[in-house]
Image (cartoon, rainbow, N blue to C red; front, side, top):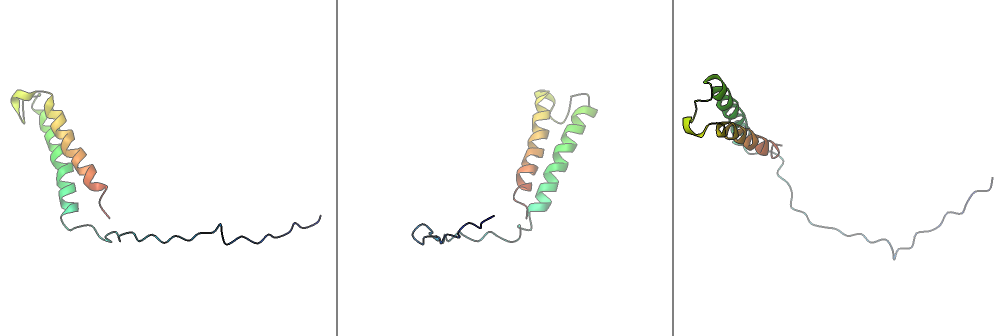
Length: 85
């Protein structure tokens, strides 16, 4: 079988663009990991207290919104986890 020709690339179509992007930090701040873990634990403890106390505590008058508060802490922990390097 015959071999096909090798074509030369035109330099007019090849463009090399150098974009200066700011360097990302190589390490996360020292406060990030403890704050992330603390938010996870605070949310977990909040939800456990809500269930163990038969929906009376940590804040008595807001009822099931205590679940939202607990999951809010956990969501905050996950948002910090996305920045961890």
